[in-house]
Image (tube, rainbow, N blue to C red; front, side):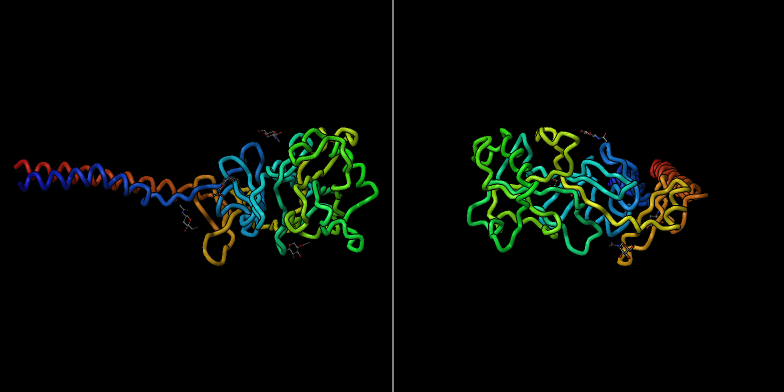
Length: 297
Ligand SMILES: *[C@@H]1O[C@H](CO)[C@@H](O)[C@H](O)[C@H]1NC(C)=O
Ligand SMILES: *[C@@H]1O[C@H](CO)[C@@H](O)[C@H](O)[C@H]1NC(C)=O
Ligand SMILES: *[C@@H]1O[C@H](CO)[C@@H](O)[C@H](O)[C@H]1NC(C)=O
Ligand SMILES: *[C@@H]1O[C@H](CO)[C@@H](O)[C@H](O)[C@H]1NC(C)=O
């Protein structure tokens, strides 16, 4: 009876407890990565929580190898980042392009955030109702000059059947929004339009809407880089922040150690906590053998 109890206890200590004990003994922090899918991640962006600058981590996350940009209107995929010009391009899966148009989508950039819409974006509202406020003569929202060629191009696409129109039909339900008049948002229900499209470049093919560059190009505030971050990066670490209220700077080293400066000479602690864990497992096993011997006698 006693022997049975002891062996149950020992089985627990040996088999279950070490499995629980090891992760808590090694307090390794998940480190940051320099890629999300095939997009390279650099400061101020981060691959996960605690990586990059805290202001940016609210908006940008690596989710199953897709770098995502979140605003109050939705989650958008980031298709490229240009660190030299502090710009990035996001794509809305619900947005219309020449090949596919659908009733959907809205886009709003949160006010007060570190992002702004690049002036070279062209926002096209398609399938708008005649009573839409965009056709209000006094408000003068639509670009009726060069915008007309963009509308003509988009309405020549076969994709327009997706919003119930015929290809090459009249463009009277199309409006090219003045990017500066846009402010921060595009609220389709309010504007009474079926969908929107965003073009950030023509790639030298103004005449072929299939080849236009669809997406929204944003500029981000690149002034968050600091000397402390530079020092951390030079030592092989990633700039990040502590998860507490103050979100203070943390340099995240590739071996999982977090410091408040850089990663030079920070290998030792991990090694010693690893050794410690082996030591504890060793103690557990010898304790088991020892009590087994006692039980035998
Ligand atoms: C990343 O991969 C996607 C397809 O998965 C491709 O369309 C895109 O061009 C790639 N980007 C780069 C920078 O390689
Ligand atoms: C990951 O992306 C999916 C699809 O957009 C979304 O539903 C989910 O909430 C995201 N997860 C996180 C943690 O952001
Ligand atoms: C960029 O961020 C800095 C703080 O790092 C702030 O002082 C500055 O006003 C911001 N610039 C813009 C254009 O928002
Ligand atoms: C993990 O991070 C916490 C808080 O940032 C820190 O206190 C701890 O020392 C870190 N663990 C290691 C192994 O560096």
